Length: 503
Image (tube, rainbow, N blue to C red; front, side, top):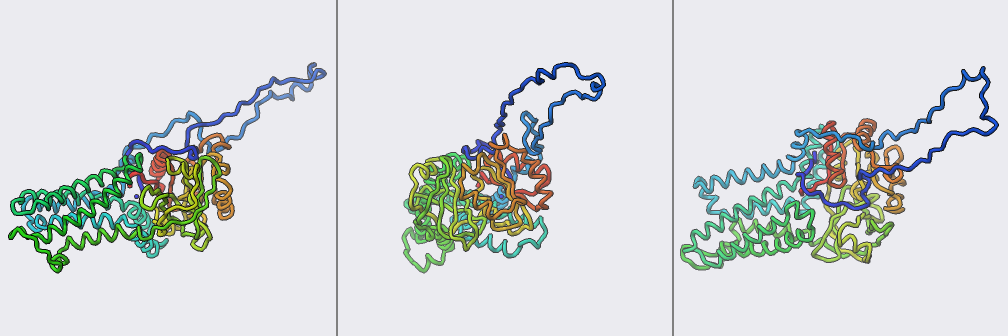
């Protein structure tokens, strides 16, 4: 999306601002001095007093109960937990969407469903239509709003957890329908080739180009490409995807206005608008265009509290649990960040951009005065925090950007932030927002530099979960930290949702 762990693969790199989860423990040397007495006191004690003198004992050093012990053996996670986290709601939704399509496809290719063979192109664009719709930011906001309005706090916990899990993992429907659409499109192209004697060669050529463009678009979205080569993913998924859309229009219209019986073109507009595939492609186009209508170039102020982080300030406030995309260009290299705001009526909202790649590094080295962004933000898992009576928001490093708004805007959420030298790294703006709006009784700031290393995260989470009487835990961390906390929470039966790497 409960959200579970993505397949174990190459873990995305994380920046120095997230060292709160590193294994490094700082040990300060203590100078040992021999026990000495003044010269006039070196004589023996009175015999009568010798029985009252106790042997000298080293004073006990009070140990932090949550400090992670160096060299402590790591608890091995059971295979059942690993399997449960791997086969998460994302993969379940993918399985449902893909299997339904493959059952229909099986009937079609086996000759038991002639209708599906005849309208294979309509099945293809219908799947693409659903795939794009569930990724549409406006549709997503409406879906989150409906769920948060209808099911806030009163239904059973299992139902609310299920709602959050499905909303977080809608990407499973996106990929399931996209892959199925490619298979249906391939069937359409193969049938066109088989009947090439009666079909126009131009239709076959456009169909092949359409199929190739759609496949390239899908391959570019594989998690390992998306997470390790973001710009490669974006260029191919977006621009080749737009090319595929134009080709789909051409392939659909040409197929609808060509009569294979008379081997002639029949450019009849009334006939064209009666075809189902025409309206499916129209839906695809609408869902793709809508978010771009909201794109604007807006003024920004950038605060640089340290070389590791840029704090970007925008005008107007936001509700909690939203994320925004920003770029220096109108159409390329968009990057998503969590939004920090004191509420919808606040004067500003903020994004924390940790220096990782070229884009975030440019914000520090060459701060812009304006950035491109979509004014309508998209909802993240934290947006469903209103479903729960009480919860815990735990994050590491720059993950505070996605977590802080929830705890600022709701007094029923507990914040745990693990990082290194947080106030110096993230500056007075973020520190001020935390201390102005979050009471000490629902706040733990773990500075690994001050406290000599990272905490025993699961011991900390378990204790806070019980004392705060929480219903759920939301996690924002790097790949390693997310894995450890997700596995630990599942082991102890704590409902949790973590960062996604396979969306």
